[in-house]
Amino acid sequence: MLSPARSPLLLRSASIASAHAMPLAELSAMSLDGELYPLAEAYASIAEPDTPALRALALHGILGNERIIADRWSAAWVWGALPRPPRVHTFCTRSEARVQHELRLDVAIREVVIDDGEIVAFGRARATSPLRTVLDLARSQEAYSESHYRGVLARLMDEAGLGLEACLAALDSRPLPFTRLARERLRRAQPAVTR
Image 1 (spheres, one colour):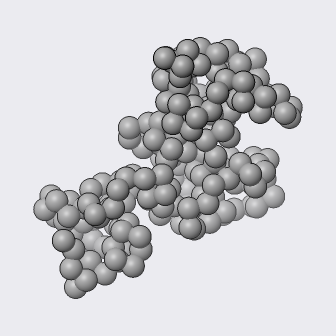
Image 2: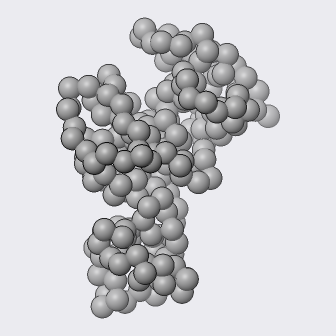
Image 3: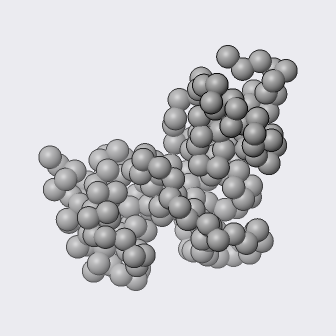
């Protein structure tokens, strides 16, 4: 187990540590010793189960701004639809927030119109709700195979208990771009959900 003398950060910060607060060599050694496991760009205590809240907190440490919300692929990882965090972390912020952040090649941030009900707070970390994540990915223009979209959407819908009709109704509730593409992807993902 972790001793307070060896790892005070882990005990005070919901069992998440990053190279910003501790030397990477020490974190790596603790991981090799079986005391920590890697989680995005952070490390978590083996005593902590891998939950959406812990994943969101690990992502929060990347930019450290409460106004930035994990969305699309990063939110899919938070909700358990991806086995590993994406290579490029995807975030959004409210269009009126005007957030300043560190420029990084492995981070994509976009400004969006988003309702409070579409954001799930995990302490100081934020992620889009499972439904918002499904809608964002279904409308996405990113260069992934359709089988990848289908698998991620099916897992996310299944984990969140979202049916096809609920997703289609949410898609029709406001004007959004690429809704035809989204309907096709959701219908293709739906049979995998009901198996």
